[in-house]
Length: 174
Image 1 (cartoon, rainbow, N blue to C red):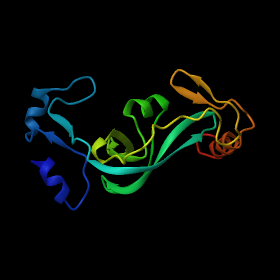
Image 2: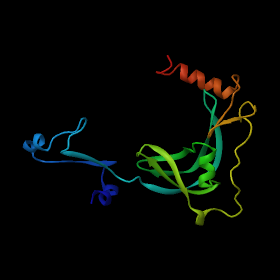
Image 3: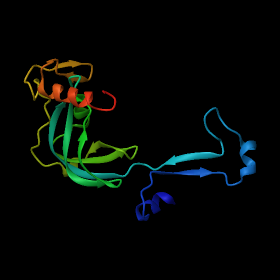
Image 4: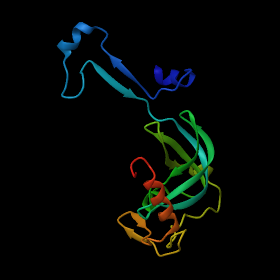
């Protein structure tokens, strides 16, 4: 019932907490080690929308990890406008056969934008599979792949150094 009511509410919710309404029953129903048995949380399935990938670009973090990112046609999902989403790694891009074109998008946990699939019917003709580049887009050094992750090993890479500085001045860093 509330899944259907959710879009018409004046506020955003990502789920419901259902509780027994009689306090006297709480001790009888009991508890597990961490949670009461007289209450349960129910998460709604994520809102999924269709949008378009306009571009895919790589970012390099402070550790040298290289991550593909999607530039999306801006779309409202779960109360916010989403224009970019992380695509995790090369294997994720290949598994979904991501290309410039239409994709399904939702917010994982109603928080993190996540591409969840491709709408092949709406994909433009003549699109080509995304090819993960062999060199760093910032310092042009050869990338190294370990498991599913690509890395830039150049300690002088401008992107790595900027991200190291950003981390250093952050709460966790300083």
